[in-house]
Length: 148
Image (cartoon, rainbow, N blue to C red):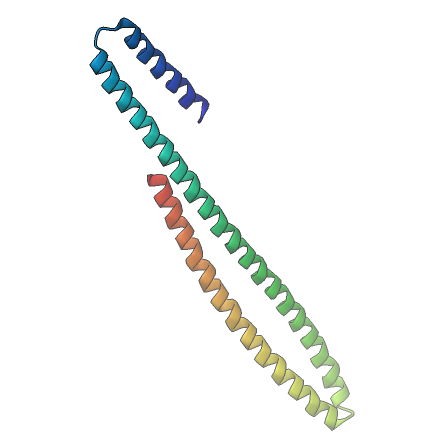
């Protein structure tokens, strides 16, 4: 409970205690107390549901962050692979002037790296779509949580 909620709770029970001590309307006092308890229990349950929803959203956010880290790692590795591939192609181009067989091997390596790059880009594109969908789902859950 927040400080304000606790203060309001104490004030309500102080008023209820005053009404009880007055003993003027015991049936009405009992009905009021029962309604108050029911209301407070409903508030407690809403609070629990809100905490549960927040925990689920936090878990989902953490999972998305983990996926984002994986995508960042994949992009870093892809960048490093591209850098290495570029360096290797340049080295092989110079060497190919001296040896035609080496040139053919460089072309094969280039083709392989290009296919790997295309495959990696397709995987990254799929991951980005998944992440976008999950961000929308989190936003939807957040908005639903705010409405409660």
